[in-house]
Image (cartoon, rainbow, N blue to C red; front, top):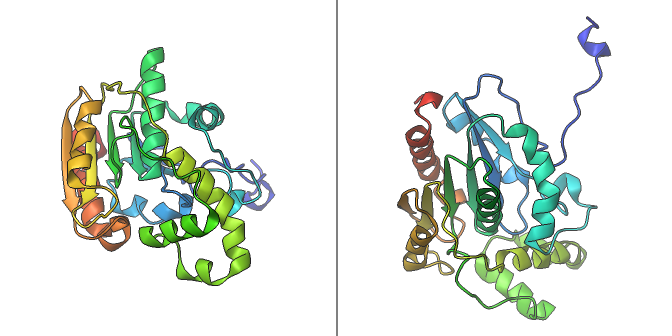
Length: 258
C-alpha cells in the first residue's frame, strides 16, 4: 500500500462538499438548505446527532464552492441533476431534513420516488415552511428594490450583503432563483413516510396553522414541534431543534442509538 502522503486525494462530490463518511452509520440524514443557504448551514450538526447517523448536507449550484455555477430556477431540472448524485448514498435507510425552500426539494423527491415505486425516506422533517400543495403568490415579478425589501423582512441575509452593492448584485440572481424554487406548487399527493413539521410561533412568514397542514401530505403519521424565535430559529433555537431532531431520528430508526 502507498504511504498516506502518496495516495491520491479523495474526490469530493460537489453536491456534498462537507460530507464525512461514517462506515458504521445506520442512517443518513440529507439536509436541504433555505434560500441562499449553502452546505455550511449545517456545519457542526453531525456531532449533535447519534453516533449511528451520517449527516449529508446538500450543496446547490450558485453558492459557496459552487458560486460560479448557474443556480436552478425549476424543481424538475434540479431533481434531474441531483438524483444521480444521491443514488450511491441510498444504500442505507435515510431521512430528509428541509428548511424553508429545502422542504420543496425534499417533498418533490419523495413524491417522485413514490410514483416510481422507489425506496422512500424513513421520515422527513419539514422546517420553517408551509406545505407546498397550496397556491401562493410568486415573487418572480418583484423588481429589485421590492425583492431586496422582502429579503430584509426575512432577516436571513447578513447585513454586510446589503451594505455592499457589488456583493448584493452577485447574490441576487441566486436568491431570485431560490425564491422561484420556494414558490413551487407541488401536487397534493401524500407520501407514505411520516412527516414532522418544525416551526416557530414567532415566524411572520409561516403561521402555526400553515405548519399543521403538512399533515395533509402524509399517510405515515404526522407530528409538529414548535420553537422560540422567528423564521430562522435554526440559529436562535439550535440546541432545541437538534434535540427534537435527535428524538425523531431515534423514533424512526432506533438502531442509530441514543
